Length: 87
Image (cartoon, rainbow, N blue to C red):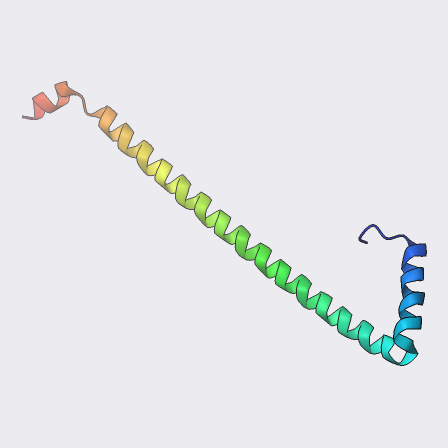
């Protein structure tokens, strides 16, 4: 977790306990936990929306490429000989 070892985490908790006091520490930890949860949800939603947009763009590009290829194939199928026989 964030590259913090167990000894560093223990030191941070002891300093927080000394600075914030035993009364406020649970309230602050609860608030911090809720804020981190909200941040994670927002990050997940943002990532999902980005992935959806990327997939949509890729689908649009593939559709355009297929249309272009179909048009080129249709044009390649028209030869001057066939057009003269139709006329």
